Length: 65
Image 1 (cartoon, helix red, strand yellow):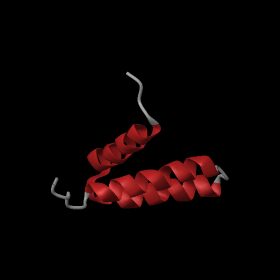
Image 2: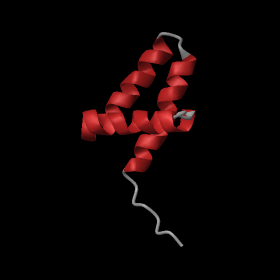
Image 3: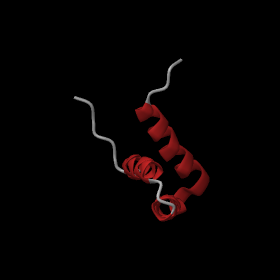
């Protein structure tokens, strides 16, 4: 089975939720800050995408038409 980049990012967001719960946003912010300080923009961008997906996990789902 081939995993897409989008699936990897969703998996990362889910992993954060499972392992950090309510502190997930803080954990992600720390990861982003770390990678920005170490001049690793690709990793910081990955964590920013994970933050967006993690945030969506807490949003109510939309009903299907």
